[in-house]
Structure formats: structure tokens, C-alpha cells
Length: 133
Image 1 (cartoon, rainbow, N blue to C red):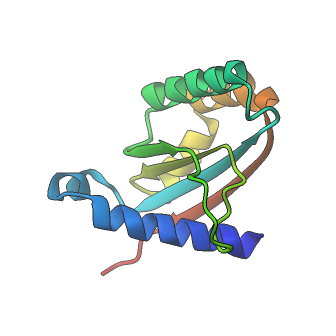
Image 2 (image 1 turned 90 degrees about the vertical axis):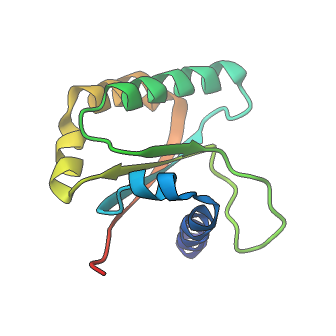
């Protein structure tokens, strides 16, 4: 399953590169990418989804450290290499690993966890630092 998630992440990032225009490319900060996958207990519950979305949008609006972000849901796929079992995924960029560490303990992030953790049954995180070109 981990291999499938990694393949999904790589595919998603590759596809994002093809769909971005010049302005978007300037705003995306590749220094540090924090990728989070959430599986909700009740993914078909509109009430739970609304509560999760409200909490995560509040986090993104109030975080002092996030630079760019993307919140998505999985498209259904027939391809075996695509893991579409998660409910939401979040990509957040930071200017550095230190900024990401500060984010982990900032009030906005801790408030999000407190507010939304009862909604999810599983969370998987992948962090990646950009390579020097």
C-alpha cells in the first residue's frame, strides 16, 4: 500500500506540473512539501465532511507558516497503481524544514487537530525537501 501511495504522490505532483501556468509556478514553493492523506470514519457523511472542511480551511487561513496549499479528494480510478481509498489529501508548502517544524506546534495547527481528529480514522504524512537544481 505504501508503494501505491508513493506512486500516487509522484503522479499527482507530475500532473500538477503539467497543469500549472507561469504565475502558479512562481507561487509554488518547492523548498519543503508536506503531504497529508486523511481517511474519515464516515466519508459519506455530509456533516462530517463539512466539519472537516471547515476545520482545515480555518487552519489554512490562520497558519503563519504555510506558503501554498492544495486540498483535494481522490478521483475514482480503475488503474491498480492508484490508491483512491483516502477521503482528502492536503499538500502544504513551507519555506524550510524549520518552518514546517514550527507549524507542527503552532496554535492554528493544534486547534485543527483538536477540532477534527475525531473525524478521521487514519492519517498518513509524506514530507519532502526540494532538491537543489
